[in-house]
Amino acid sequence: MQTLLKLSVPWRVYCTELVRSEVEQVTLTLRAEFDVERSHHQKMLKEHARLQQRLENLQNSVNLQLPISAASHHTHSLSNVSNLSSESESTSDKTEQVSHVLLLLGR
Image (cartoon, rainbow, N blue to C red; front, side):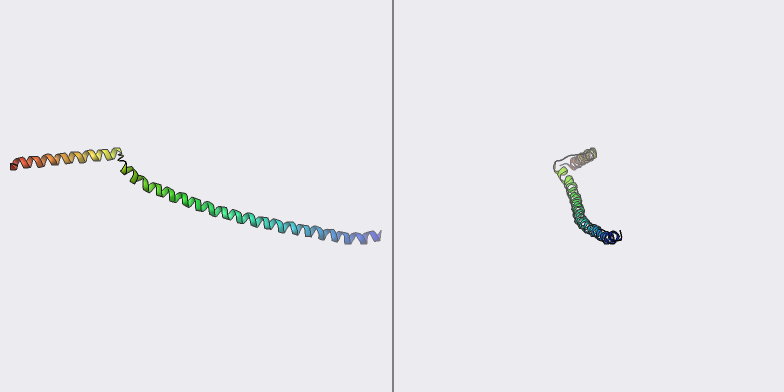
């Protein structure tokens, strides 16, 4: 029986060391996989930020071009139409005044 105990102690140590070695190997593998995944995630975050900035720049570019294209198509809002009407009335009033002055001067 003592012989069995003597053999079993080294066997336990061997098994413990074998398991410990396996655990260390798995740990190293998992850390390496984690590092790869983290690196990939960081690249994706940078790409996402770059695309967000590009979207914002494109939206700003479109917003800057809209007033120019709207003016070139002669679109008028209600406030623009009322301003144009009052300018037109003002111009016709001035034309009548000039005509009246010319009549008075005899031209």
